[in-house]
Length: 350
Image (cartoon, rainbow, N blue to C red):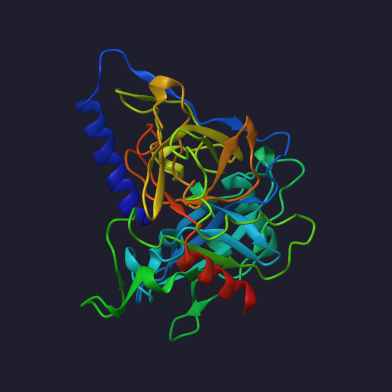
C-alpha cells in the first residue's frame, strides 16, 4: 500500500470498523515471538523510500518494515509480487522517488533500528532522517540487528534507484497506464494472480540454511489437505487488536499512527479451510483461537503442521490483505505451481 494512501486508507478503515463494532469485541492474537530462533531463514523486508518531487524538496515517506520473506538460496529471498511491484503499480510510478531495501533475519529488528542503521552507514538522502524518522539511540535494540542490502534492480533515466525486487512477469501487464509511468497489474484479484517475487541480496547469507520449496504439485498429493493446521512466520505488526470493535491505536506502521515492535513471530492461523488452484486459505477465525497476520507480513512463508510437527518446507507465501489484522480470509499464494518454481529457478540460476 502506498505511503500517503496508507494513511488515508487506514483512517477510512478505522471509521468503517467503528461502524461495525459489536457490543462484545473478540481479541485477536498475532502469535508467539520466535524467541528460540526456530525460523532463522525468515526475513523482515525494510524499505527506505524518499519522494523526489520535480523541482521540490525530497521527503522521506517510509523508513521501516514493508513486507516479509524467506531465504530460499544464499542470495535470494522469496516474497510476494505485490511487495516488489507495488511502487510500479500503485505509487508514484517509475520516476519521482528513491527506493532501497534491506532485509534482516534477526528475531527483533525495529523501525528505529533500521533508521539508526541508515544514519550510521550514510548514503543518499539519509540526511533527511530527522523528526519522526530520526534515530533514537536510547531505544535501539542491543545487540544491533544486521541488515543485508538487496541489489538495485532498476533505475530511472537519471540513475536513481527505483526498483529493489524481481516480480513474476505474469503479474504485470507489458503496457503502461495512460500516465506513461505506472505499470498495470495483469490480474486484479490477488487470489488468482501469480503473487510471487524475489529479492536478490547484494552479498550471500551463508550462515543460514535456505528453506526448501514444496515440489510442483506437492500440495495436491497430500491427503486431507483441507483441515491441515498451518503456521505463518513473519515480521509484520505485532500489537493487541480486536474484532468487532475499533482496532487499537495505530492501524498501520507509520510513525504518526503507531505500529508494531518488529518482532518475528509465528502465527497459528488455523487449519486450511479452502484450497484453490493458486492459493490456500487458512481459517483465520480469532473466535476459535486462531492467530492473525497484519501489515508487513505479506510474503511470509506458510508451513504445514503434520502429525503435530511443523514441516520446514515452504508451501505458500502470504498474498492478499483484507480486513487489516483483524482475522480474515487472507490467501497464501501456492508455491507448488510450475509458474512459481520456474520463476524462482530462473532467479537463482541467473
